[in-house]
Length: 470
Image 1: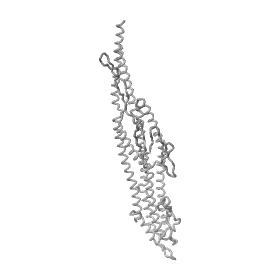
Image 2 (image 1 turned 180 degrees about the vertical axis):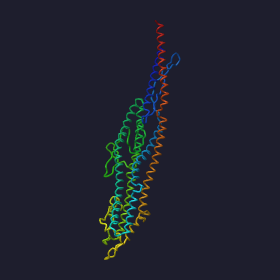
Image 3 (image 1 turned 90 degrees about the horizontal axis):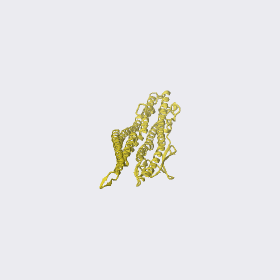
Image 4 (image 1 turned 90 degrees about the vertical axis):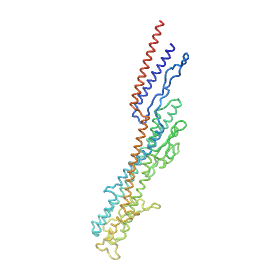
């Protein structure tokens, strides 16, 4: 009877193991579409054999662990690819907006500059015509408005970037906090000799998300807890301690700060990566550079036109008037600072337009004198900003934005392809395959049926022995 009881126990353990394996397969199938889920499988270990009259007889099987298919190298590579993808993806929308502002269509700033100087050319054909003079003033106002519009568009893009950053901060903090909580959960489960597979999967997903958003890097301490830090070394998670990212309004700008234990540190561009680096880089580097170029262009047009205009005279023979409002800057700022925002008309009357050369007092303006109008009209074809004309200078600005936007599209496509390849590699190794799970399901189903048949056979044998004793 002792041997039958041992066999009965072996059948019982086999039945339990096959049932547990089927449950694990069912969990794999149910999580086939769960992001970051790693396929799990039972680790089977035989019970220690028992010495029976010099023979060692097995006593069944048990599930010693449930392992997850995982490759840390691929996981690390996926996080690294996520940083580049986040960077390019963060820059995509702002660059698309900048490309819209500095467009190369017929209705752009370059065309407005051409039309403005063409109006002076038309005035030179009839320098005393009030209609032509009114057109010159109107074209000057429209040119100023276009500079204002572009400057406002650049400010709006910066504000939109700030709004995007603010909207993402709460989600970032929740993920940082969740990683710290998962560290605690995994540690508590590990000290009991168990494996927190689902918690590991979730933690890896969160680490990948933080890499995409902040360029965060991860490593593990001696307790197996994940430590997360920014590219510059500032910590986000240490053990079960989670830091928090906050936004602070700084005038028209927005600063990022890292708070931990009452200590606050500013997060600069050197401490960012991924999507946030892309957003802040566009906001703090690219757009200010474009604004500076736009101001130089506005300053160049304003100064050149005012200089020639002041040397001429209006119909009232008065000279020394500015056509545009002079640019005023406060030292030590560059002389062209805010020139695009402040550009405006200084003239209010068409008779003040200086189409003629200033006469020698007490003479009056000669009828038909168009020499000053011709000089201003020719400014459009003169290299006045370094070696560039006004249009070629704007063309370089548009080309710079276009090249950056095109490069971003190419880089984003490449980063996305790299992400897909790494994700496919990860899924091929650790993901769930329905075909494979169905094969395993049949295997353990047959094992369960065999175990049940084995137990039924042992039961019949025990009944037969009992009948012999009656």
